[in-house]
Length: 239
Image (cartoon, rainbow, N blue to C red; front, side, top):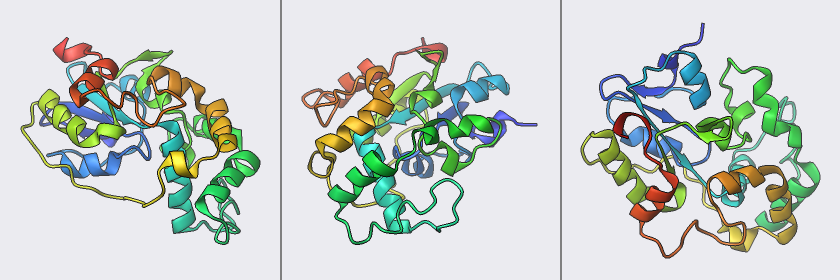
């Protein structure tokens, strides 16, 4: 039987962190006090499994171009065994390609759109490889409606993490960077063809998280608090 206690939760501080893959989740988890390092479960799953109503919930989202580029560079660096059931030989021939050419080839010729929904085939199991390519809104929304209390943006992660600590009433904590993979900024490394391929699959993430597909950040000139106000509608415990 699945239980919300297997997720990223703090019983002491009464909060749940909805861990969207490749959106600073590991860094956030390692920086929070008294939190269990759980699985990549969705808010819908936690609600189904009985997450108490008084728990505050939050998540981080990321520009889909940048998130997919990060996934590509991470897998390319780490390497994937040819017999891997999901990723297969995707990256075995990319060592000789530039990141820019390799990412375009991957997204346009090799990426399998069915990867986006493969995690639904085993909804009671949080397999990282299965959920890596899922739409971000699947973690934070239910029937198209934001169902976590706050959604912060990766692009202002340091300031947003400070705001999250205040929201959770846990006092100030420094963000500890983890699982970082160096790669070029997406405006440099993502071609128009690759952008089109990403947008065709993840357009709903662009829409729901208000990312402009033609710009790097959500609102480049806005203060982090303004970004939080736009993306972090206050619902639930602190409404």
